[in-house]
Amino acid sequence: MTSRESCLLCQIIGNKIPSYKVYEDDLTLAVLDVNGANPGHCFVMPKEHYPIIEQVPDDVLGNLFIVANKISSAIFETLKVQGTNIFVRNGVPAGQTVAHFMVNVIPRQENDGVNLQWKPKQLSEEEVSTIELKLKEEIKNTGVQKIEKTEKPESAPKEVVTQSTPAIDDEDDYFMKQLRRIP
Amino acid sequence: MAEQPQQQMSEEQVKALQEKLKQMSPEELKEFQKKQCIFCQIITGKVQSKKVYEDEHVLAILDINPANPGHLLIMPKEHYSIMPQIPEEEVEHIFLVTKTLSNASLRALEVQGSNIIVANGVAAGQRAQHFMVHLVPRKENDNVGFEVPQKTLTEDELQKIQKTLSEGLGAKMEKPENIAPVPLMPKETNVVEAEFMEKPITEKTIKKKTIKKEEKQKQIKNTETIEKRKQKKQTKSEKKQTEQKQENVNLDDIANVLGAK
Image 1 (cartoon, helix red, strand yellow):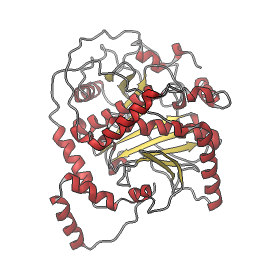
Image 2 (cartoon, helix red, strand yellow):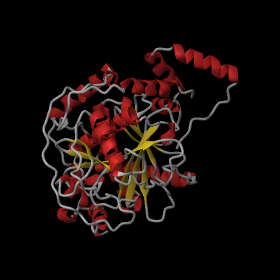
Image 3 (cartoon, chains in turn orange, red):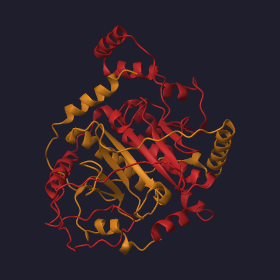
Image 4 (tube, helix red, strand yellow):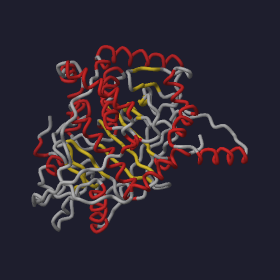
């Protein structure tokens, strides 16, 4: 474990470093990325210090992604973007640079310079079968099947104001547009 | 990304289809989409796939056009186009499965990391009509070039976005007190060395509000099955599977490498 005192995100969570907070509850904090890929790019982080996703307890992780989804919806509603990405870098080869697990929520427009596409790798039938077998075996051993719903954490947003968001119609439009996309 | 084969339609066909789609109710549309959706066919077994994990709500298969070996697609069995449409309980479950699958790939495939990617909307790179989570196992120098550029915004812009977004979330967050927050993701990996100004943000006042729930997310069908799961859960004592399994693997190593950086 790394020392929490030296963790940048822990200092933000502890209010030792100022940040642009957009959401906070008992388990989760979301702040704006000051050098975001697009305006509205948010980091969603557990308040407890966990370096990688495998170490994050189920209830904390569940809440984290529920919050990420809320932020993604709010971005659609309020920032009039054309899309959002949820993006996680887990481990150094995956591009993680801070030893505190977090989720990126990135607002998207066409041609905004963000690239989360890839060039497909060609694998032989045999390679694919080996991978399939290895994964299935590991999943069997680690008992993924036993995943159970965790208790829903009672973590209402810490701060709320009486005010309605008028932009909800836009969201509906977006949904409808999505639904009406021709396959 | 596994793609739906594109069928060529004549202009009239497209027009007729658009007209038809416009007149459908949301329910009819969903039904229509389901029929068209190749992933729904994979889920029902009409189209073949390499399944690695399946439960009542979620299916995980190998991507046929993988970014890396072991690239998985994790999808809800119910048809949703984008993440904001999915009920909370299901979001939670999908990502718990994603976590365990990430864990399994670290162990089984000798990789040292993973990327989790969700694309909502075409502009975000979404190609399939069915919501899914991509889990991409990562190794050093594996030639997967995800790019998330860093842009610079003024303090004013940031404050404006903060206000809009936090209000949209039903929260009112205080702006930082005359201090520009430091970047959380410096251009390179020297993270800890940035200068920090120590000035605690004061506690803010709390006002209550009932948060509007998006009814459309609460499809009865889902709630029912999830209730069932909840009940099942309550009868069982909680298991700390992840912790138990950690001794024999590299998780701590993976985390430690991070810490060292």
